Length: 347
Image 1 (cartoon, rainbow, N blue to C red):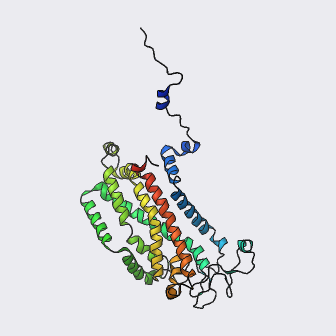
Image 2: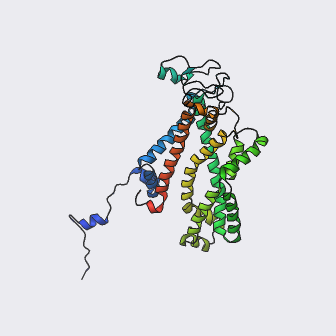
Image 3: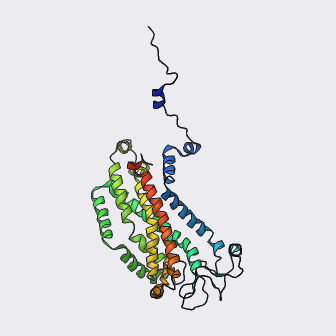
């Protein structure tokens, strides 16, 4: 007696429920299911889309800064001055001295041939428009540089502590605890002030200070994630197979533990820019007149009691700084929701 296999035919509801007929797009085939899920999740919510639009806008401004605000002199980051008067000028005031080259888009958009201070001037007649446009490049340089270096330091220290454990873990974590007890902005201010006579007034003193006191959070979060992964079956199989410790750590463990750190890093870019602006506002770091949003804000210190008249020296750089930080925070929140395993059913 031969065994017969029943072949579903016709309108078989159980077969439709058990076999997926979802169409796979070409992008999913190229990226793979997991990467496609991440990319789709990042652009799923309106908040994340707004965040990406803000970041893309700032990237375009930074890239095309020479076309938007043609540089004056040899150093494009030096904000051009319309004389040396102390009282700020209102938006729309005409240039009188050291008039920069008129950009190609100006006549088309305004219909005027005379180049004016579009956003007004700050104390010392520094043009606010130039400070904001070229300050975008400063924001990206400082934010990305500090985050990349602090993430690298934190990941190395945290992963070594978690993987090897024992006295190495105790020693490294006690160092982390000591650094975390120090107030971040105060220590960055002190170290930056100490380094300024050695390096001169430049980007390096505040950058080194923020790196020195900014890596501990990454070390702690990567350590906790590695501790939860290092005893799993695929890691034990790699050890039994004779794989070197360094290869096991960076080849098998790190790719599965790095995502929460990346989320924290995306949120950290905005925090770094805010901290750098705070140091610039306090007069630490770059020389006076350098294109930096914090320094543009610092020009308003003597006019705080008259902001009803000189509101523009605070409002314009403040709005730009807020939008920049908001963009990174919105993208960081979207990354957290997509990369968190507990949220995968919702993304």
